[in-house]
Image (cartoon, rainbow, N blue to C red; front, top):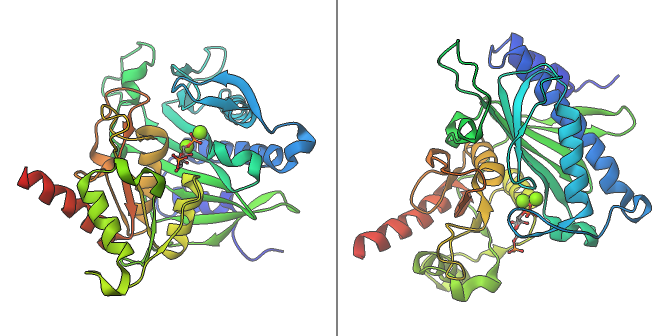
Length: 343
Ligand SMILES: O=P(O)(O)OC[C@H]1O[C@](O)(COP(=O)(O)O)[C@@H](O)[C@@H]1O
Ligand SMILES: [Mg+2]
Ligand SMILES: [Mg+2]
């Protein structure tokens, strides 16, 4: 018998012992975890399952969809639509929201996901993932009967009730928060279950490792350049220490490294498309990752403001992202605020 608790037991404890989650939310998380297991099976099959390559279509963001983007999206919808816990879902891969059809029981939760994060890494066998976030439909008026709509989703990240990701890497690991720290569960393929392998995940406040796509350097704003220049100057520079750099191009994998050993991750606003606040999506990527990082003792800002306090105005809103080891994130944020003050 495995002495470590399973995801189910962990969730039951969060529900019964800590009173942190209602039973409906526990069951909803279990369904998402089951869907991730199915996605992991497709990912692992690779060329054998004919799941690699482009699907020949584009999503609402104008990005070419990979077959696995579509498969993962369908798996998440199929698994969740009849569970009875959800009112609607929203996905990076769908233009509008997916309201649970009324032939199925309705619930009060809203599920948001990036079904397949790191799509450019699918065909080269590098770690990819699924990111998810759960909100509750605000319903102050118990007599309200109007159908769920996009505005129900437009809540700031601090109102999330659960968030996590699953990384499909050398190990398949589900990382979760329900507001009581961060826990990691490794998929035991022989048993078919998620086993708790790390609890109370903590990100060290200082780091010597930064992650940013350096090819965009010429497009960055001055505060980001200043921070990275100082890192690159190493021992001889103002930071007085050498830094290391990593960029996997799967946010899931970069964040997983930061939760495992610290670091800072940046996908900042840049001059290529100045009207866009950033590349990453607020509600499918930045909010769930931001909450996980904060729950592990780190910080997450858009350079000026805590990400979890950004109030979305539309479903596919983008945001500049700086997250990870607290002291480094605070430094980059301070550089932005100093530059603003000097303007
Ligand atoms: O290729 P770039 O510009 O470095 O962007 C990499 C970033 O884009 C993303 O892949 C976006 O995610 P999707 O694959 O879900 O579109 C992030 O995971 C990653 O951090
Ligand atoms: Mg993504
Ligand atoms: Mg994606």
